[in-house]
Amino acid sequence: MHPLLAPYLAGLALGASLIVAVGAQNTFVLRQGLRREHVGPIVALCIAMDALLMALGVSGLAASVGGHPRVLDALAFAGAACLLGYGAMAARRAFSTEAMAVAAGGRGPSLRAAVAQALACTLLNPHVYLDTVLLVGAVGAHQPGPLRPAFLAGAVSASAAWFAALGYGARLLAPLFARPAAWRWLDGAVAVTMGTLGLRLAVSALH
Image (cartoon, rainbow, N blue to C red; front, side, top):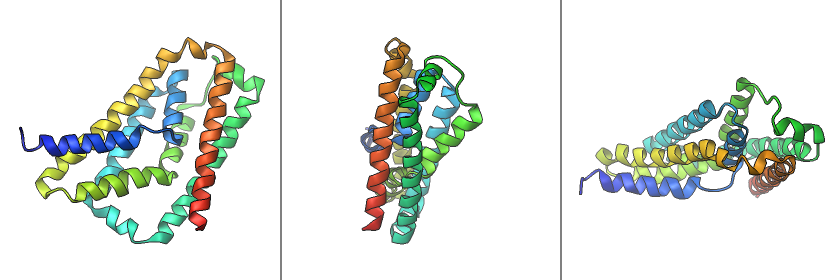
């Protein structure tokens, strides 16, 4: 076996186990994929941000951030506010007949607005830092120096495969979401997911 294969597979397995979960970033990419709006730029942005944060973690930022609880608390409060805000927006869409009509085929947000929301769901979500910077970073930092790039490549590969599948594979569900009621259920699920995560973050930061 090639000496770089083992760390690559280790990074791939860790990245896959962390990213395949319901969260603000994933639900946003799924929604963009279902609407077929700015899918390429959003998927590329999410992959790039994950790659950057993982690289920072493996390079040693994980140890630095982990030693400052106040920084983590500040990120938690900012993330909670962001998640609760977007959860409220999703809840409003779920109960708005006008929003349902737009979601079913009307004009969606501009590329700038979509990118801004994707950045908010990424950079203001402490779970992203926990997964990429702290967890991947901590494991990657324990790899021997020459093997760290292979480990990082594996973790980034998992992220790239997941976001591409989520964004472009969502269109397979298009027949289901041809009905406005399906969008109501999706936005309701997004509202519950983001609201729950936001409340958990706020409570965890207070303890």
